Amino acid sequence: MTLWFVFALMTAAAIFAILLPLGLGARAPADGREVSVYKDQLTEIERDVATGLIGKAEAEAARVEIGRRLLAAADQESDLPVRSAIGMRRAAAVLALIGLPIIALSIYLPLGSPQLPDFPLLARKTAPGGSPPMEALVNQVEQHLQNNPQDARGWTVLAPVLARLGRADDAIQAYRNALKYGGDKPGLRADLGEVLAASAGGVVTAEAKAEFERAHAADADEPKANYFLGLAAEQDGRKADAAAIWRAMLEKAPADAPWRPLVTASLGRVGGQPPAGGQVPALPAETMAAAKDMAEPDREAMIRGMVDRLATRLKQNGDDVEGWLRLMRAYMVMGDSEKAKAALSDARAAVANDTERLRQLNEGAKTLGLDG
Image 1 (tube, rainbow, N blue to C red):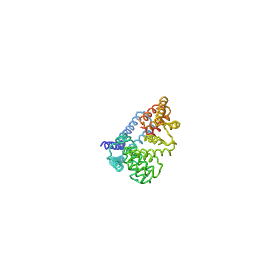
Image 2 (cartoon, rainbow, N blue to C red):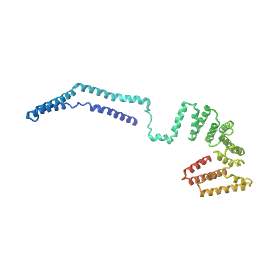
Image 3 (cartoon, rainbow, N blue to C red):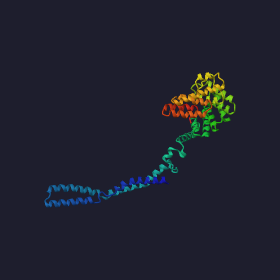
Image 4 (tube, helix red, strand yellow):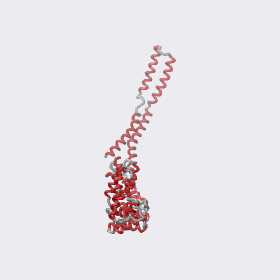
């Protein structure tokens, strides 16, 4: 009702703005008083001539000018133009009172939404329920895909966004549609399997494993599929198989592969050793070479000593971002995720005033799964 009341006020104001000048112009030019004034002036001239205040020539000129004005005023006061003007004003008033609302309604009803509830500016910035603006964009894409269900690229773009928003079931269906309309692609298969595993609380279910196996069959080097196949083996209790899968990944991986720290940490979790020729990101290569021939307890003690010394050095000088990342990777390999998180907190505090170092630190932490 408030919306209609506002519309009524706006309509009344518009009509008033149109009728006001019409009403002001409806009055007679001078209500006959101008003619009376000119007649009085003629009488006054006669008196002035009689008393000798003005000459006959000046009086005659004044009579001519006043007579001209008198005739003009008399013409303006004729009834016919006034009636004509009144008729036009009445027609304009009727058009404003009746025609304007009819025209407005004829435009609003087909284009507007009379039943739509109030949607203030704040609600537009944050969707109902506090949802972020991303929801509005997702809704637009979903509406587009309802009208164009075979748009494989649209499904491919939408699926990861739905996964990040926590809409796992919708993300799964979006990935299936992307595969259906865009063709079988190993990367999409692996992404689908990841969402299936995430929706199961991190457990690689049989359905998710089937997707990873299909991705691996199409591309034996697909990293996400291989990692999750190793995770499936670990969850099944086959740690040796998991270690073999992850070690093979590290043997083939480039030194700067973003997923290398995660795989290295997982390999350490199942008790596997990194490949002889592979990069060990946690500690320098010479340190690992020196520990190669040691007994297991001695080697573990030496590595922990190196890690502790690195941690002590970083507490004294925390500007070394790469050192912090090595320390966190070392803790992850050793299976001590709590110390890795504590190291990340200390590192962020140490480089908080350096925007570039903080950015590098956060990017490195994301590769370790420590971006929380």
